[in-house]
Length: 407
Image (cartoon, rainbow, N blue to C red; front, side, top):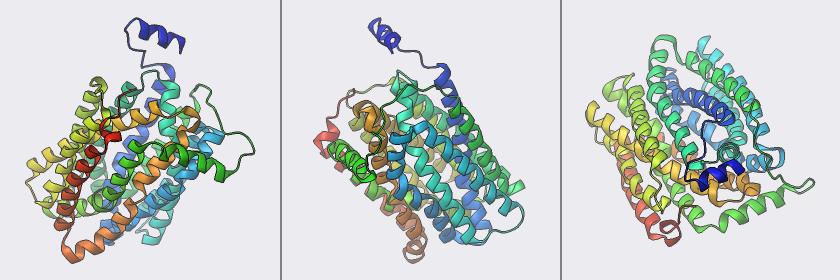
């Protein structure tokens, strides 16, 4: 850390590619690649098994619901036992669950109940893993924004190649192959995180109660209007935009453009995310959330181009723009949290913000099929587009969000 201060005093940026950041980057990049392949495998695998868009929504909701409901406990456990230990354990659990799903697809047609149960277990493991993703970055890097942007570019590359690779593997090898690859990526992630030499972090005092730990995290969360204000808008987005987007989008694109088209569209998102991550690596706005919110307007091109049944080229361009906007916003948001929350409560605060962000998504995923059967999938996505623009107006109207300064 002293070296980082001296570097900053000389006007130079701290070194990014240290041993520990390189290990963390490899682990995250590999597991993100596996995760980028998974939505296509879930969508096409569940559709191919005959369970329809409603089945896709239920499987996705089964993963998201435990993540949303258990992540608060994941934050407490990460502050109590260290994020590193919780992340390794979560990776090992997901090796088992994803391997089991892979075997079920490779040996026949799995029941919808089996997919739901194993997806739920995987989501519970993700709840134990996710809080540490935020707190780990400040422990292994002195340039938090550049580290976040670099990880976002890795995410983008995975989004670029992962879905298309998944689409090809599903067509020629089935969804089980993709799930098997996903299990392997979690094994690599566990090994990389195990090899890290992270800086000592403050932990929760021994003997303190779970309720007290949760309350302390909640007090820190609610004291920041800029944080809970964004999460309220994201909760609405989860029901009307983020939740329905995958099950309805995959069904409409597959229906109009063929089974492999959805993978290519997700790759377009990856291409855009690379651009957004690169921009976020070097652009440091004085008001990160206000700038990010304005950029997020472009994200809502994705539901718009799907709902209006645009040609493949136009649709791919819309997906790419959406990916760029999402990447830029994500870096601004993550960096704001990591630099404005004390390390000893960061995991718990992260748990509240992630939980609030994803809590409503299972509702949108589960309802997307039944609602679209009544009003049409295109109308659901068009409604989401309108709500998305209204949400940005709300964000920019809140002074605490609009005026938040870069640390």
